[in-house]
Length: 173
Image 1 (cartoon, rainbow, N blue to C red):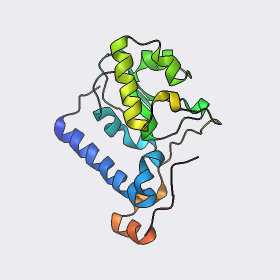
Image 2: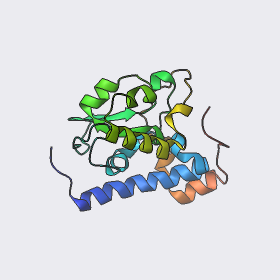
Image 3: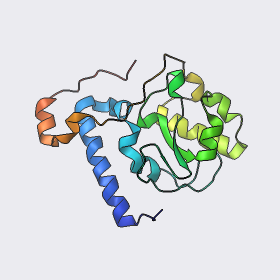
């Protein structure tokens, strides 16, 4: 896979920052709960260059929506357990860790990690979710969302007219 240079990476990140601004117009402060991770591959990749679960280096995103080479998108709280399909519940990890974690709860998975990686993974989870992994409660299975929101095709000015106030009053149930 071809390495991505800093100029190209910055261009990808700017496209995703534009999406984030548009989602914030639509969903207000809760936009991260509604931002599908596959639309923010570069933002998620830019968070760290190593797997937070084992420390292995990560490959840059490629053409696939969820996985590229030995790097996979992990839903920290598995969708099968009711985890949110959002960027706040997603992190890039190495393929080996993603396969080993499977559908375990994040608390169960943490016990499999080395102490240093356990501490890092717990901190990432807490920072992204706003609560520790023990606060997660299982729900009905969440659907995997891959299609972008149609509203994102409009400019921010148009979205401000269409959505003078956010369409939600809180995170998804």
